[in-house]
Amino acid sequence: MGWMADETGLEKCAANYVPLTPLSNLRRAVKIWPGREALVYGSFRKTYAQYYERVTRLASALAGMGIKPGDVVATILPNLPPHAEAHFGIPACGAIINAINTRVEPDTIAYILDHGGARVVLCDSQFIHVLAEAIERMEGPAPVIIECPDDQAGVHAQTDHVTYEELLTKGDPSFDWIMPEDEWESIALNYTSGTTGRPKGVVYHHRGAHQNGMGQILSWQMTHYPRYLTIVPLFHCNGWCHTWMIPLLGGTVVCCRDITAPALFAAFADEGVTHFGGAPIVLNMLVNAPEDQRREFPQTVEVFTAGAPPAPATLAKIEPMGFNVTQVYGLTETYGPATECTWDDDLWGELKGDDRAAIKARQGVAMPAYEHITTMTSTMEQIPMDGTATGEIMMRGNGVMKGYYKNPKATQESFAGGYFHTGDIAVQHPDGYMQIADRAKDIIISGGENISSVEVEGVLMAHPDVLLCAVVAKPDEKWGEVPCAFVELKDGRTGDEAALIAFARERLAGFKTPKKIVFQELPKTSTGKIQKFELRTIAKGL
View (cartoon, rainbow, N blue to C red):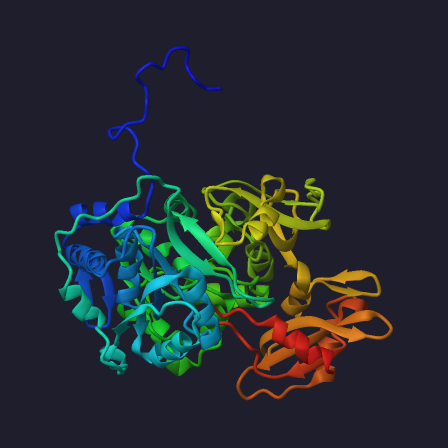
């Protein structure tokens, strides 16, 4: 199908076909913008020529250590220059980068190192002792440790392991990068959070990493020379592929070790940051920052937010501060963002306040790397697009993982029917835009009625005393389950359970109103997601 009658001699060859890979992005950038600033962290400032040389030295040094194509090299690093360089340097020697969450405990790190088979680990000095404890718990051979101090932050070397900068001196700046022969070759191994068991290893291919990054340029309507602030952890979907993407535009990656309001406002004001991605908790932090932590900046900062649906109240407050927020949605299995709330000025340009925020809170439509994303029933049938019926978000396209490493059963289950099954429950509006109702496991079923925890959270977040909240199911003898809200208050506020329940009752159906409110700091992952599994455990004991 689709072949011409006579295509003799029209075969793929080196002249007309090159496997897609994000490695090409940096190789191109250094030829066009060798003197343009590429990578920044405080006094560390490198041009594209310097960035490329450091990446090349890393690739060469790893190869000199015996790392071969197909081997795994792990990282336990914050969003600092060595981590950005590793995203190019590790695959440039043919290896696969395994960026490990810096906040997981030694037992999980040991499991990941064993399961993924990492031969080398690049580790920040802050986490070197955690890594040492993890290695003691490993069942297989221990990886070689390369320590990465951060002297600018006062995080100095803790051991006598070879340091990252020492490793680079051993690399050859003329090393010939090992480019993929097939774009289906693996580029990254990322592990899920593992909240319901051992984490699963998600495998990315070069094609998907390239297409996801390219697609986000279109979705974000980016132009040349963006200044991108690394807030999304590089261990989280490889920072949504943004570090691989920025060289396509000759942009600058601005690194950030600690995500605090003063650090972010300084980046906007002093570094001229134009773009960042982050969870709603980051937006909430900016909205609630005290005046003495804020800085003025002239540019509008474009923001991709994902991780959990942001409350409309947060969106309504942050845009007047100089931010334009676009809601995106994705998973580890989809290289990060897969859908976006594409804004239509003709339809929504006049909307203000809560009405505008309500549209922006949608998860939206498929991004360019995806062939089809929609909401279907368990029998793979399209749900009615009426904004009421619910189904599971399913997707297919070049931005979907290869599968789960060493887990064919889970891979087959997740790809049943030719679509990736996300496990997220959503409605679909008449215009096709999806809006998450909940994770399947987070739906509260009370007396036979389905309650979206996201809906209840959105109402509670509009209360002036509430900083963050999460709603989970609490067992109930009469109704089976009832909503239980966990609320983190703003500084200086005191919790009034009865008043907050009354506030919710004015805005929700009675059965959706929380029956119990607990005031406490909410447990969070390193990417800002609230750990509802911990709250469910607490709720069961109430």
